[in-house]
Length: 302
Figure 1 (cartoon, rainbow, N blue to C red):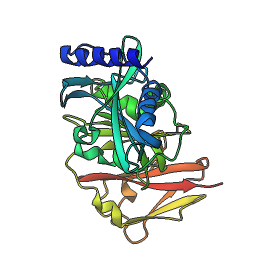
Figure 2 (figure 1 turned 135 degrees about the vertical axis):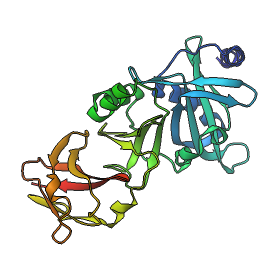
Figure 3 (figure 1 turned 180 degrees about the horizontal axis):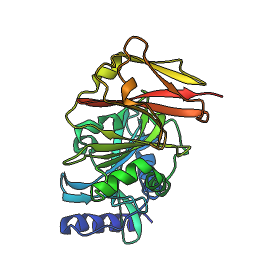
């Protein structure tokens, strides 16, 4: 078996040199190969995360490698994995990373320095070990992304671009309706706003929002929502004098409540938005000005 792996690895290296196409695979299929390789070098290896990107990447000793994620089925050309653990040889703590590609009908993992390949904005990929071992596989991820109305509209309007990055990592700060182990998919938005989607790694709950390019959304730091949680109404107060639009969306990005334009600048008393007709759950108040767009979470409880 070990000889077969060496043969496959040699074939894989030749394939890189020839820039041939790999057979796309799911994240879990690639993970199995990476986990086996990590277990050979580390005691109790812990997964820091996995990622795939779209585009050409220069990998030392292998040249240009093409990577992509197919949102129609959740397959990736190549998947990167990073582990932390104690080396079996020296018993020191370290990290080790692999890129997995499928060739000759079998996933093959080879060791690379993924940290040097990652775009700077995805350094949080290295944040900490995943707290969940039961993360949904990439085909389910793709299914949930396709079902999101906000993302569907964005992709249709922008010619169905490839995701710039798809990352599974541990998120400790509240950047979405949830924290913990999350899938994140990012579209860069050339010529328009970009898009980011967060998918809970266990439940599959999905939230997508646009990424404003070159605008300032810091005004929302001085905006408050109360009461929160709420049953009947939420009052928006604070830095609202420059609002051009205000509405509520659900976790799927669907608009569920709007504010009449004549009520946007009620600085003295705030903006009251009725929510009595909404089911219990997580929602977002969308605040828009000429210079930015921001979202503030609210919870409706019955």
